[in-house]
Amino acid sequence: MQTSPRCGARTRNGETCRAPALHGKTRCRMHGGAWGSGAPMGNQNARTHGAFTRDRIAEQRPIRTLLDETRTLLIEIMSDCPPKRPAQRK
Image: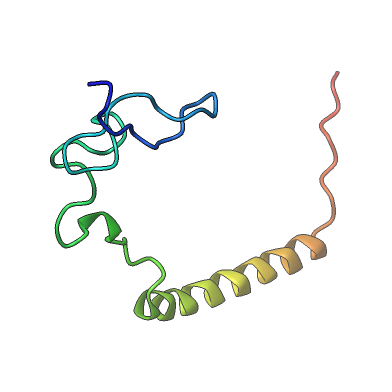
């Protein structure tokens, strides 16, 4: 046990982990040496939601233009209206 290679991971206090590395690996069971640890085959973790694809951006462009025009129109209408007076209490 004393002669087995040690895990090289850094702990929270900045020192190296003193746990023994798993057979044939450079890390202990707590720092990624366990069987099945890591990304799955085919890297399913890298899938994205598609919100920033070219098709999605092209789909959003006319909607954004319509919203900008609507906002501009509302600002024009509000600037033409006289300000409301607060109701007086009796």
